[in-house]
Amino acid sequence: MTLKQSSPIHSPGLLPCLAIIVCLFSGFYLLSKTFAGEKIPDSKAANALKPFPQNGHFSFHGVLPGCRSPDQLNQAVGDYYRYWKGKYLVPSVTVKGDYKIKYDSHNRTVSEAMGYGMIITAYMAGADPEAKKLFDGLDRFRRRFPSDINPSLMCWRVSTEEIAHRDDCATDGDMDMAFALLLAHDQWGDPSYLAEATGLIREIERSLVRPDYSIRLGDWNDEPGQIRLSDFMPTHLRAFYEASGDELWTKVEAKGYSIIRDLQSNSAKSTGLFPDFAVLDGEGWKPVKAKFLESSYDGSFSYNSCRVPWRIGWAASYLQDPRASEILTPFMKWITSLHQYPREFKDGYHLNGKSLPNTEGENSCFISPTGVAAMSGTNRPWLDSTFQFAAQSRGNYYNDSINMLCLLVMTGNAWLPTLHAGRSPDS
Image (cartoon, rainbow, N blue to C red; front, side):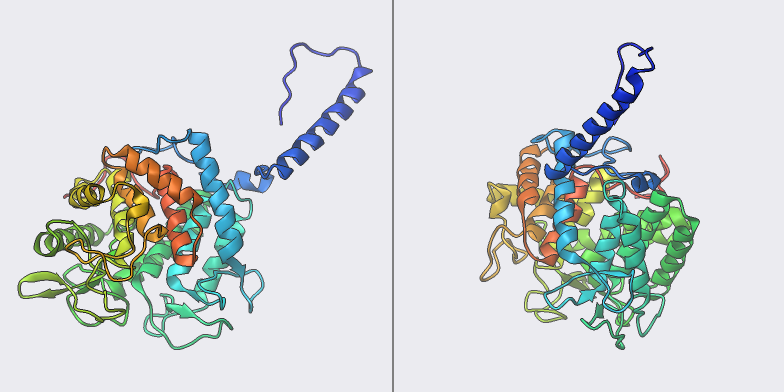
């Protein structure tokens, strides 16, 4: 806290009294702020090079919510982060100083959750003086559980007892972790993060990218022509390209957009919806049949593809990529024409727009990504309503983690690593 003096104090006798008054006042000030629940800055947080909040500190092309002031938007994100951290970020039960993201009530975790946690803690540095310690603990934890196929990648699940099992990887977790390491390099300036990130990016290329530039489901996925649409993360692919200089990543990015356009044209022309999984046959990319991998709704808009509007929307507003905006246009037109409010959007649809059996509304892993998608368009009322919903939403690990990430994007705080102005791959 800084006190401004209107005029200098010349009398030496007043200085001790002033010092006592200042100390007492400062103590009461900090105590009142603590009881009010406001975050008190910590000197350790000064190490963050891009401390939260970052909205307004980098080039951004989308609209932000207009329902609250920038300070109020950031306060809502900080409040949600404290809730999320307290509920899901827990110490390892086997190695002191390591951390994991609690995936379920049994304290198990998965690589997807670890990736989410690493991204979130990197973004919240500055607001949370523990962010670097937590990030490093999450990173050490994920390295202790390697995939049985490519040990540079993480196995996709870890038991309550944290006993290493023979298991393979899931693509999204490793892609998020590599992206998080790039964030960490920019956030804390340690070159070891960049070295670790580029090494992981090379292994992702080696094990998870096919010769046709489509993305495998995991390092176990030897079959050609099979994808999970939520594994397409254009912001990450652009960052991988910037970090590595490898043109392969621009080809992977272009391939992903091409696949989604193909699916929308052939299978979801009236809705713009995305299936959880798709396969390539002689006539192009098509939604998979029921129980392809996870459920009866693998070929529908369900609990995997609900993340696509967040992943694509992030690229549309932060990268100003017209390919992303083109994909989102029919989706947002359909969703806003049939749903007056975001809360009405249900947790699952057939690609023709008919809701899946036994679906409900008010599910943040479906609703909050639509707010991200709305950022690159002109529908600020939808964005405002989505943000208000997201700020108050409380659910399970999956809902809350996706909600936290979407809140960061919707408020303009999900800055991208190692990007150079004016440099982008050809469309």
